[in-house]
Length: 76
Image 1 (cartoon, rainbow, N blue to C red):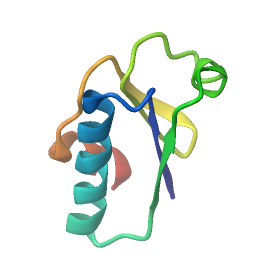
Image 2 (cartoon, one colour):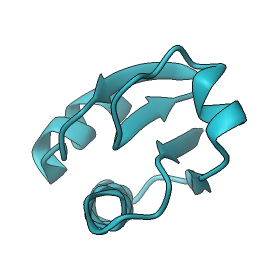
Image 3 (cartoon, rainbow, N blue to C red):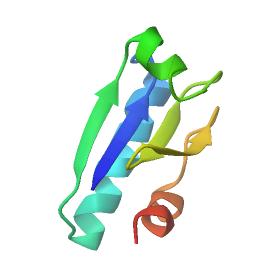
């Protein structure tokens, strides 16, 4: 599983990444958390607001910091 954090690296993006990493640890699953910071790559997802989070290429949220629980529900 691949979890992508889409954003330029702002504090909200970093918090989203931290929440994703915590969700992966708590569920004890094998997943890769990757940061996508290039605007061209972010635009390919159709995302207009960051931070955003995608699971296996599917955008699950954009424009807000998802909670650890929300992320866990998306990756179960």
